[in-house]
Amino acid sequence: MSPAAPAPISWRSPARWLALGWADLRANPAPGIFHGLIMAAIGAALFSLARDQFWLLAGAFSGFLIVAPILASGLYRVSAGRAEGRTVSLHESLAHWRSGDKRLIGFGLLLGLAGTGWVINSAGLITLLSKVPIRKPADFLQHVVLAPETGLFELWLLLGALLAAPVFASSVTALPALVATRASVQEAVGQSWRAVADHPLPMALWAGVIGLLVGLGMASAMIGLVFIVPLIAHASWHVYRDVLASQ
Image 1 (cartoon, one colour):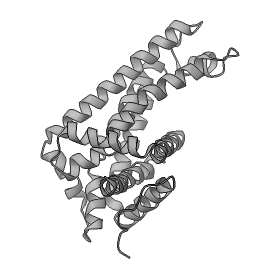
Image 2 (cartoon, helix red, strand yellow; image 1 turned 180 degrees about the horizontal axis):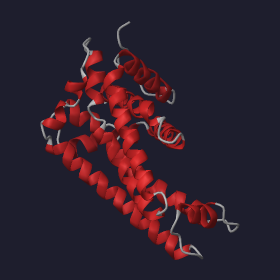
Image 3 (cartoon, helix red, strand yellow; image 1 turned 30 degrees about the horizontal axis):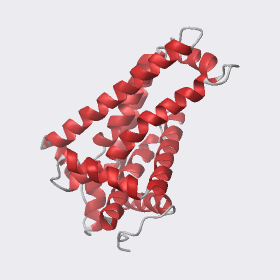
Image 4 (cartoon, helix red, strand yellow; image 1 turned 120 degrees about the vertical axis):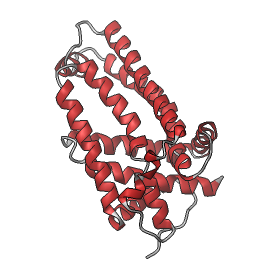
């Protein structure tokens, strides 16, 4: 069966994007599983190195989660190739990194700076409002998440959402665009913001789906990321195709 053509975007689209991403992964699993294994290994290494240092752990994982889509961007080529009726090898999926595309490198650095900003603001908020120093993950769980006084954890989540929203809006279709075209970073980000503005409900649902899947992957001792990383990457290509067709 040939890959599905782009379709109008609606609140049902996230489920469709996941189904199409899963079909891409099943049709050509080797590149996706390779990328997923690398991401899971990086996540496990970060946790092992910083497991008892909360702010180092938070910083490491914030940077990892924000930059991971850049590292998995070769999987967009796999989905694009399948849409063209050909099979893209692992070697080809990694080719754009050997080309040293400065747009992807620059965009990755910008996303890394965004993650750093989140950690700094998060640390400032917790340090200012917490009654006890937060040094270990157990401290955060006890004195922020499970604290009898309400408000700090909810405020921390709100701050995270406010800082994550522009990062998501800037990157949701920008990364596939940078891989598929010669668009500048500014052009790709502008298109991504227009997609979110034109389809706020489907994009908000998609952001929630990504957050849920990544959370499940991390909660499974990173093992779930082996499949979740390629699933999200392949699905993101179909987000881009549908957005491109709608503009």
